[in-house]
Figure (cartoon, chains in turn brown, red):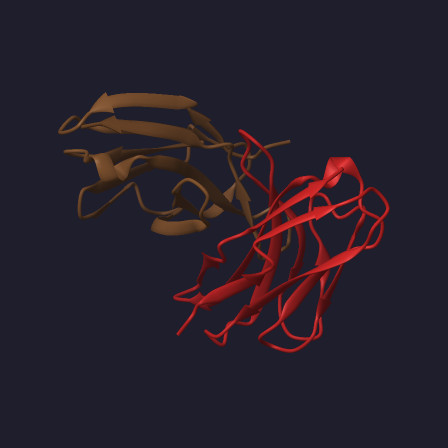
Length: 113
Length: 114
């Protein structure tokens, strides 16, 4: 089963608006990462938040992590048409014993110019 | 510095045919991974290699085999392709920095099995 579940599955906003995507997971984690995928391309790492961190910023990205609720959110401020992509959360789980990430099903973001 | 490269980019197979997907990375990473991505879904781990000479099963290994040829190369083989293996396949690599793994992905191979 998918460890991470993103919400919403799809999001359409106007350029300049903020976009918020949420991710829930089920097991204890070492860290949580967000990746971006442009149509027909591979995934690109955006930001990593450790399990002992609550909030992290990188440019127009803001990530929060609530380990008590097993959830994370990704906020993209002042969105641009170029932000149109799918966004995936990925967890570095403590329970599997393998050094591999578990990906959610993604949020498809459409930013209208 | 090409990062992670994959060949081929596209492939069409008939049921029962075999093929090998190639992956190479030039970042001197220890760990490499093979994922599949089906429409509307996230990535599912097929196999991974934590270091040269080791390979381990992921979530969906059935129907696949892998070879970690050397530190740079990690190949995925379908011995007898089935329509259920129609998917986009991504290779990734990572190395531990500051105690964490961040993955770098190739552009993908789009495979159709008829």
